[in-house]
Image (tube, rainbow, N blue to C red; front, side, top):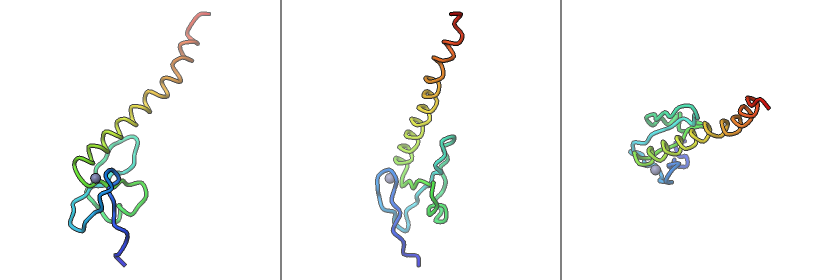
Length: 89
Ligand SMILES: [Zn+2]
């Protein structure tokens, strides 16, 4: 029963061939980890399938954007409150 639907790249929708060397990335907001392809991991939820260096670059750039948004968003929400609390009036 090795006939599953073929993997597709999460970034360019390329279907994976048997001999292609692909990469996996754990969906982790705190760190960007690129792993060698592993069929067991590829089947699990929470892993992105990446077909090439250029798609890995897209993954990194998307992760960095999301990461920097997470850093700026809470600060933008919290800072005005803190600033207001510091004022004497
Ligand atoms: Zn791709």
